[in-house]
Image 1 (tube, rainbow, N blue to C red):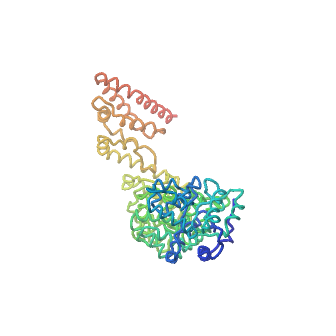
Image 2 (cartoon, rainbow, N blue to C red; image 1 turned 30 degrees about the horizontal axis):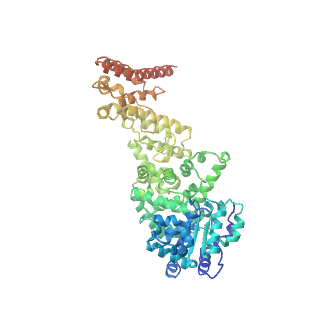
Image 3 (cartoon, rainbow, N blue to C red; image 1 turned 90 degrees about the horizontal axis):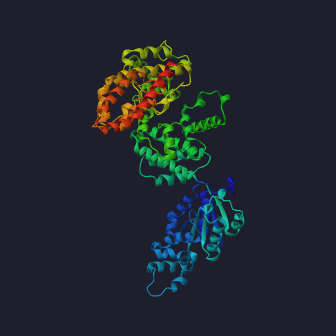
Length: 618
């Protein structure tokens, strides 16, 4: 491998000055120029922009012909790329067949054509023009390190254009990825100057902003190039490709989600700068997707003593300190929702909107729920803390915290304050006020689950619970889960008409997926409130078994390994008896068909319940 030396990096202005002189045939003729740099250093983009400058377009110099070695199976494939740019008509079948011969033999080949040529007249003119003035041409070879047919053969090909044809040639390569024993020998023969370039922040920001569609992200990059450059440079190296991809992701996100994000100066900046600082680490392979969620105080690192840290903990702590120092660590879009966007393009619009809608940075302190403001304890002013605490105390007194994910966030904050000698509810420890709260009739009967995007013990609403590894928090979790389960059972009876309506319409989700949200993955018994004869009439429809409904019923018990549905077991016995009776009353052959279909399911279900019954007794 051939490594780039950092001290040899040449400023873009000096590279431009050299290329101007070289391409004007004033210096180093008879050799090629190598533009070198690491992956993502912006080499190709630099050359593109060089030839797009107004000064170049106004000159008498011809537009360059460009070919990439990437995917080219041989030398002819390279020439075909030049041909298609020399004149578009040469993309015709005959033009492609000519390949290298047409490009290199020019007038000799054309003069051999007689009468009705298979080439278009415009094709002939283009090749004649090339052959008549070959030395006026400029050719650019990209991706030398990816030459499928070998770097040595690629340099031999380049040498033909330089030495034999006298062309001015620019070669673009990442030398650190070239593994060729004869590279140095060939390079010495073919290349006159090697110019190592890196992506310069100002030019990179300008190029990426120019390429983005109109929108908030483009506007921010255009208005704040110095701030963006500060974050880009803090990473140590600027990767043009990564920056371009990350800003493309940021544009798509801001364009698709709640427009309050685009309208919030602080919120928009937080997403863009966090994407640059942390997204660059992720795309460089230095940060795993599962580590990203832990960057905002929700990882195990934050609750371990420093002497227990491993090498990754030390790295993550250093990364956090570095990114905080440049003011790019906070993002109103939770990091765990950005990682899928960066890795696979998955944009979880609903979850992002949910987070935006309660973030004080976007909706303002007054509009954000008190529990959400208190979650930001480490970033609150004294006045913001006092206001949020008073509001939260009032909501608890008035039984307004009814989603148990939100309630557990309040518990986490309360335990954290308690550790510092402060009580959320005056004079009462966390477990004391929580026990009183969930015992209230206006709370216990109304406590509801909600979709969770963390595991049960991790967090809710895309935010990790404070103090979630503390023993008191685990006790509180059990108390809230039990209260929510009690409420869910009571609510299930009230919701029975709605569930029956769903089942009648072919929607069986209330049977096979009835949980306390996703936060508490435990089945809630409710079928005991349903007339088994009614459900049998839905299972056996005009002598045919509704297999999806049967599968939903029996899979319900397959997954209940701990007997959470034991209140349904007497009902299940009645249901099986009614079902058998209904099948026996059918005429042949429907009776035999239905019996065959149900036999295995009925026996498996009975076996599962019996085994669960014995286990719970034991």
